[in-house]
Image (cartoon, rainbow, N blue to C red):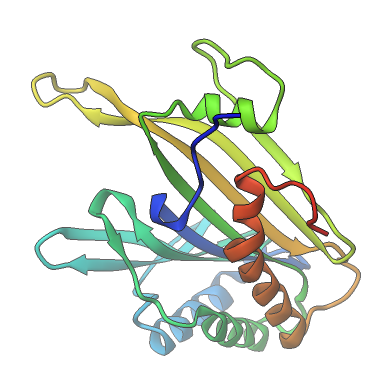
Length: 251
């Protein structure tokens, strides 16, 4: 009893939403470089609000976008990267250091359009898994985040000077629903001492990876949209019930 902390949207300090796709055959950077460049160019032309600068090397291919906030600063962030396993889209929702929320609109339509363009250049690639990944940092102010995690989710004592990280897959018949939690300290630079940081509070880092459990078939647009819609619903409702200790009742 007496655990007062509640996870709410208002306590989100930082939030990024990602969509990752597992494809087969895998991407081979040496062989696929020209095709990746073609896809990248198409996406920059089609969605300049999200894709801007193309960065390419023998082992790396990504696109970044510079977001400008008048009076506060700017942030150049990767919005699409290609791994061997497939494309990973990154949509910044809240940028903690600038205390700014981004209005990116309906990103599902953007993802579907981008993947159609990818299929057009790589018709031999099969889409086996799509994951909606949300990464949050929840501010717990002066409440020790390790204590919150230990008390609510384990029977362990708080590790003195250590760390705690949990990974739970609340899988159902259709989806993996993987939740990772990590206790963090919020650090700030000490103005008087260059290179020195001090703890100014606590936070909980939460990562939610929602993806299809069955990887036996090539996912079409309808299946991809269902994963994204179900994943978003889970993040907006069931996730908070779980984080706030309502473990029963969820199917």
